[in-house]
Length: 259
Image (cartoon, rainbow, N blue to C red; front, top):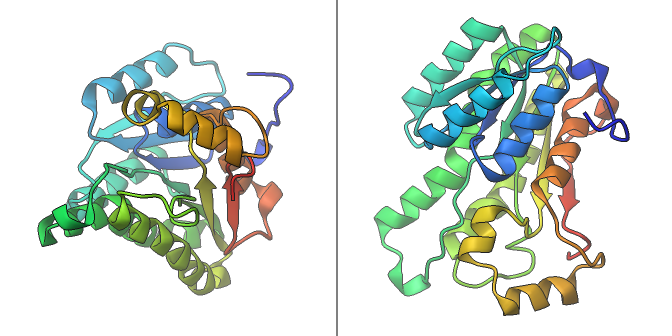
C-alpha cells in the first residue's frame, strides 16, 4: 500500500460488491478495496481475467485481508445477479458497499440500432445497476447504512458521437442515483454517482484512442495527463467510507477538468 495515499478504517472488514471487476476500472476498484482490508466480491463475464485477479490478490493475503470472491455472472440475467448477491451474502455477510461499475461503451450509429440492440445496451449499462441496488438495500438497512456508487460518464455531457444509447443509459444513471438516494436516505443508505472522464484503460487505448483522441484530451482537460483507473478507485474509496457520511445524491466527476 502506498503510504502517501489515504487509509479508511471504516472500510476494514466491510463487505464490498463490485460489478464488472475483472479488468480496467473495475479491477482497480477490486485492488483498492482489497488493500483497505475489505471483503471484496466481484462479478464479471471474463472468467480468465476474473480468476487471475482473485488468484493474484489471494496470493498476497496478510492477516487483515480476505481472499476476493469472483463470480461469473451475466448481469443482464437479473435472476443470476440476485443469486450471486445471495452467494456473496452467505460467504461474507451483509453487503455494505455496492459499486455498480459494469458497462460496455461499444460504438453504434443511429441507423444501425435495432430494438434488440437498444434493449441489450440498456440492460448492460443501467438496468442491472437498479436491480443490484434493490438486492443489497435490505442488507444495508440491517447494517444501519451503506454506500451505493453508480458509475456514470461525461460522454453525454460533452455530446460524444456514435454511442447514443450508451449515453442515454449513462444520463439515466444520474437520475436513478437521485431517486434511490431520496428513497433510501431514511435508512442512512447513501447513493452517489462516480462520473469518469476518458479513462485510459488498456481497452480504451486498444480500441478507441487515436491521434484525434489524444488531441481532444490535451485540448479539453484542464490537467495535461491521463485519467487512470486508480484515480477512479481512490474516489470510490472516499464515497464508500464513513468520511463521506453526509454525501448523497451527488455526482463526483473525475475527468481532469474536461466538463
